[in-house]
Image (tube, rainbow over all chains, first blue to last red; front, side, top):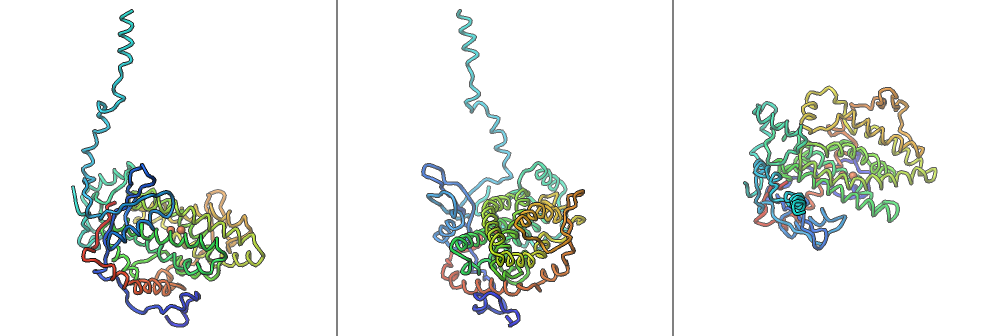
Length: 123
Length: 330
Ligand SMILES: [Fe+2]
Ligand SMILES: [Fe+2]
């Protein structure tokens, strides 16, 4: 940088700032890992997001920095994004009738009235 | 079903506004948004929607990273242990925000490294406000309180948008921003209610930051057709003027209650319209700075390039034969 552009910041002024191009080369691209966080013992690990990393150990380090800076955490998992196999969201209608399946719910089974009626009949 | 993640389209840039979208798909897409449902990465979406979101989220990510630079260099000079700890935590959050946002943008098919390269080459922009210097500790205080406050107005609006990954990132970001705002307000009030010199120093910093703050939300976009379409798609959630007005409503009183004021005699709320009036903030300067001619544009990019070059050996040491770009799941 020219002198007139010299930084007001002493720390920056001491750096030898580069001239010209600076790019990340294609062979330096990183993949992504999905991050799962367990808030406390006894709870499930929950998906909280993803991180960019060159390999799994670094992914775990980044996951800790990114997703466990605050709040509770006892454990984390990272899984390579490409190792996750999932339904397509476009097929979500295959789940659409699930809430209608009342025969699978405890609330569907009510016999109190019938018992009452039976007991009245016995009198 | 799919395995191996989403495969980005060959060249998302090739898609331009002239792409004719299937009207039936377009209607379904709009209906889903109107019902308040979120769009997820693998859903069909108009090319324009994808393009605008990539641009917007990417620039938002760059703003977090570049925005951490003026504050980051103040860590060693922050007055006292408590302020130093708060600033370290805030700066780390901002870098984290950048990463969360890059991840959200990546789900749309543009690799993160490409976004970083577009930042480094100057092709991709970031918020103008970070092209101004933080000359004194009071400037850092103004950034921490008022610039973060302005960013929160914007981010809260966007967190109600239609794109799932962006909303999720913003929810997390907004939770952390609450701390940024509080620690900024704390530092601001501390200087304002301190010695006459501290008060004066803060007022001088507020004077320096007034124009950039008014610029922050961008020029009026009320009549833009483009912006109307983006609002229908819930990519843009509020007009620039509305967000600026909301910011002034919330924060002018908080500045004035400690005896500080913005250096503009015309900054007044019209009691009839509920709108704040202010002097012309010199939009020519705004465009000058966007085009690279602000006081710190060159320095910010040079520092970011320095980080890239000095970090190269680390990236190379970590490189594995398995490393290759992938798209995050959601
Ligand atoms: Fe942030
Ligand atoms: Fe912030």
